[in-house]
Image (tube, rainbow, N blue to C red; front, side, top):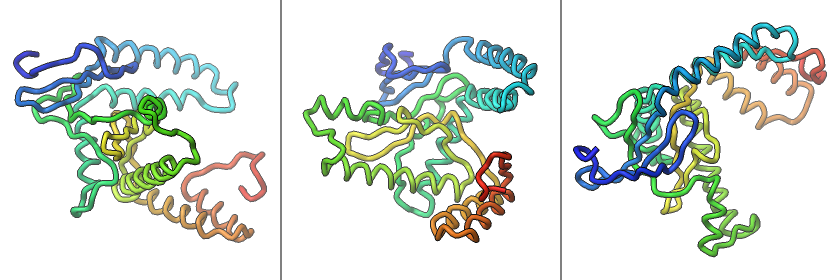
Length: 254
C-alpha cells in the first residue's frame, strides 16, 4: 500500500455484501475511493443463488411468478458485478456519454484511476458529499431546515429531479446502457450542491428498437387525453414491446 498511497483509511466509508469502500490519498495528493471486494465472496454468493434456483425450479408451478427466471437473471448480473474492470469500463462509458458534444454533464460520475483497477479492486475519484439517504440528517446537523415545504427543499428537489431525469434520458434513450441500481445510497449530493452517481456494478442494456418503442410510449402517456383510442394505442404498443397482460387485467389491457 505504501508504494501507491500516501494514506489509506482502514475504516470503510461504506460496505455492502460484495465489497467495501475506503478513502485514500495517492502519492501526489489525489484523493480517491478504493472499492475492495470481500475475500471469497464470489463463490459463496453464486453457490447461494444456485441453491435458491434449484429450490425454485421445483416450485415453478406453485408461485404466480417464475422465481427461477428471476434468480437466473440475478446470477447473471452478479457475475458481471464481481468484475470491477467491467465496472470501471461502465463508469468511463457513462461519463463520456453524459459529456458528449461538449455538453455539461447533468450528474457527476467518478472516473477510475488508470493502472489501479483489477477484477477485485477499483480505485476511482473520490466524491465529496453525502448519499441522498443521509442528506436529511446531515442538514439537521448543520442546523438547516429539512421541512418539505421550505424554499431550499423545493429548489433542491427540482434540481435533483432535473439532474437525474436528464442523466437517465441520455443513458436510456441515447446510449441504451444505464445505471440499474440508483437507490438513495448511490445518489450523492456533493459539497457544492451538485448531484453524483456512484456504484456502476449493475448496468442494463436495451436495444435501439426497444428504446424507440419506449420513447413512443412516453409520448403516448404525455399526450394522452384519456380516450379509448389512446388506451388502445398504448396497449398495442405495449404488446409490440413484449408486454403480456394477465387475464385479470383492466379491460383497457387486452
